[in-house]
Length: 170
Image 1 (spheres, one colour):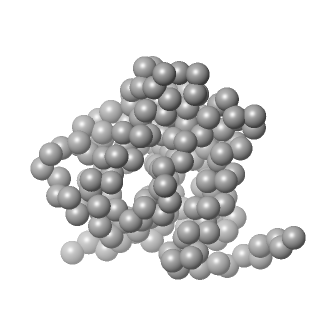
Image 2 (cartoon, helix red, strand yellow; image 1 turned 180 degrees about the vertical axis):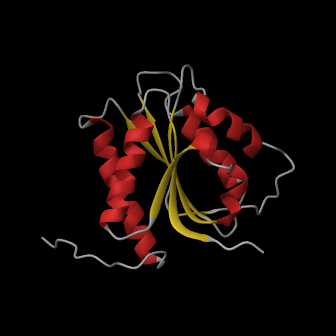
């Protein structure tokens, strides 16, 4: 029996580096809140270990015409294997943040596909799929900040990680 990793895993899939930047920002924001966190490119992570994780956040961009970024494709094929059990991720808390541009027809298609597939593997979603849009007046950052705040609130609400820092109260 393997033990669960206590660290928040942040996995990103990126073509141009946007998802990596957001994932690293989330990693810094987690560490600021004393949440143990690790960030990996999806291609550098052994997806077979997902069921051993405590909490995983996916940050994923859409490539080309609705395709997965190249760094995701190998692990994506593994995740799509029909022999994976429906309860594979039943003890894993998950969130997905998609990065895209709504001027494209297949806006955030990779994140939508990933979220749909993960939902078939039975995780506990911390929140609904969040889609960040380059066309937002504040860009991706506008959605990211809302995502980050809700993510940490949900983690604290279900006691995934203790609140161990002083939050500013207005």
